[in-house]
Length: 368
View 1 (tube, rainbow, N blue to C red):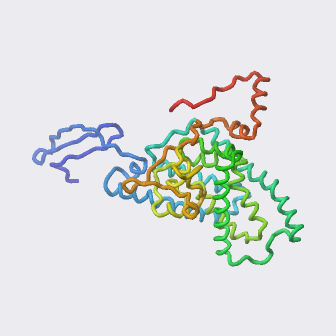
View 2: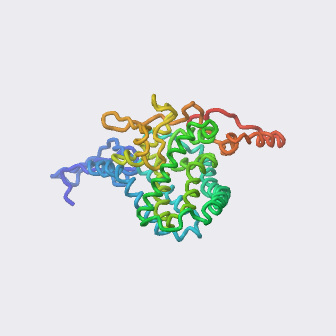
View 3: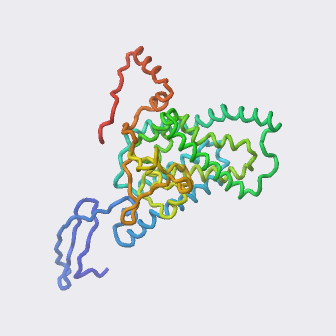
């Protein structure tokens, strides 16, 4: 390689790089100097080897493209791999969580708030809501619905004839589920008891994939599971469910992505992270009542019913301060998330006194 008469820069993993200059007339005589290394930025920039204009362009475009591309890929994988459900229950949920965590790493958010101290709570809540809440909800609700159908309609399903082509049933399920969730979500903010259940989900100080399922299981079941049991006795084609449910489930987790990804025009159709962050704002915008952006999957319900809010400055979507609107700190104890709103935590306190287990101090957690 002809490098005589030029400066050659040697990359270094440390804070300095070496510049070597060799003259044209004396290639055997070289001088070396050092200067501070350029900061390589996010993991995505480092992945492509620097901070050049092309890398910056790729990273910027990726922030807009990653959501729809990854969504389509995960939905396709889930549909194709539905046969794995019996051997690996809920594998698609954990695949989606892993994909969103990777997205959070690639598009690191400079304003992220550490959630490491809450990992045990988040993992425990995820396990309970994924593996237990659905089973309990089905066991409690399905027999009642089946009994009603048998005595009112004289059959297991409300409709026994075809409800139309599969594509139409898919659209119908998407609209019905998202419509139900929107209004249930609004009701959970208005009703005092339901807010006690739901408010623990709003104590988080940052949105992450792992705290998407951090919620009291009763609250989680009312907003996310009940509607599927209700629609299960209508008579929709199983193929329609096979297509619609993954789309709804995947995007529900996407909305909690903590990475610096952008929605663009999708902000007006689906609940992107940029949109959903404002639902978790600690300061509810004036004139919007209890909260904004209630849509779990689709934001067009908020546009339709006047609860959509996404402020911008200089063309950029603003980020809110995330937290409980009443100023309550995040709760690190899953037992309190589970039992306090139901008035059952006194049992734990009684057991601690009986066993002489010291109580942990309450209040805000120390800053990291």
